[in-house]
Amino acid sequence: MKTDTRSTSRLRHDPLVRGLGWASALLGVPQVAAPAGFARALGVDGEFRHRSATTAVGVRELAAATGLLGRPHPAWLWGRVGGDLMDLTMLTRALKHHDGRGLGRTVAATAAVTAITATDIYAAVTRTRRSTPRELTAATTVIQAPDEVYALWSDLERLPGFMAHLDEVRVTGPRTSHWRAGAPFGKAVEWDAETTQEVPGQLIAWQSVDGADIDNSGEVRFVPAPGGRGTEIRVTLRYDLPGGALGKAAARYFGEEPHQQLDDDLRRFKQIAETGEVVRSEGAPGGKRARGEFPQHPARPLTEEELKEALA
Image (cartoon, rainbow, N blue to C red; front, side):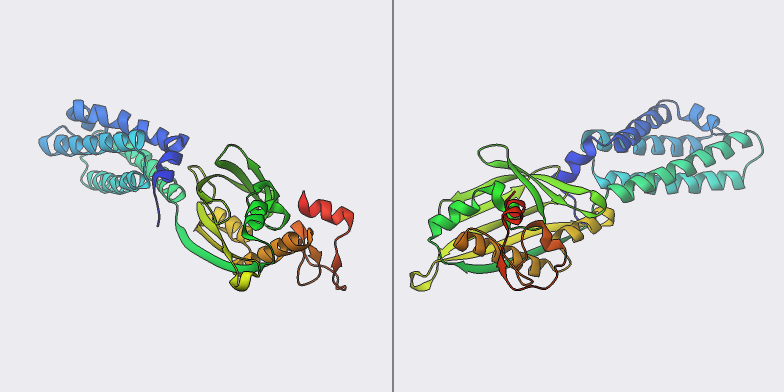
């Protein structure tokens, strides 16, 4: 399970998380300020042990409120779940040994805590990002000088022309860009990226920024091939594949065989760099149509319409 500053940033603006934070605050204040009265409102007497338990619960609620509203983290949500289970245990014990006075209030409190527990469990499960880090590497050789290959790759808005999973790359600043990729059911995954290192003719490295649907980073190195025969392109991609529905979308986004997909992307880039177009064949499909299947036919260049689609 992985959580980091991206989780904190996302949870800080989550309405459910903030709502639970304020709920903890509203419950915690009266339990600490007037424990005897709060205990009687629950249908139990105000004797010392009940007041002490009520105060302890109030302190716990205020701690959860501080965490969820100040620096939200899934750990605070799971802490609420643990506290709910303790509260249910105490209320169940109170029901078992109840003297009958205020029984209806205790039953109502137990039902309310049960509903809150279900909400907290839902929030904790859905706001905890489980991820599987993955790393892909691939390489190819292009019969072009490193500076020329670098110039072609660094034109980010052309990347969807040979990377089949990408729908759009839009440059948003000197070192920033916005990326969008297709996902199942007509959905899309998006992220903003920042160029973290750039050495003309040698290296481009990037990292997704806060709020990315899929956290990712990578680098492309351009190395002179032995004997002056072009440029070796060495690509490394790293990403965290999240769980749940988003994980399924990400799996489709990266393809069933991510390494093979990256190899195919590099093959299409090699064709564009060396010939100016993607050569269409069963072994080297072009553009977005790499996601589908083709009738068999001899290898041939793309038509003018297909070339426009591949490079759009």
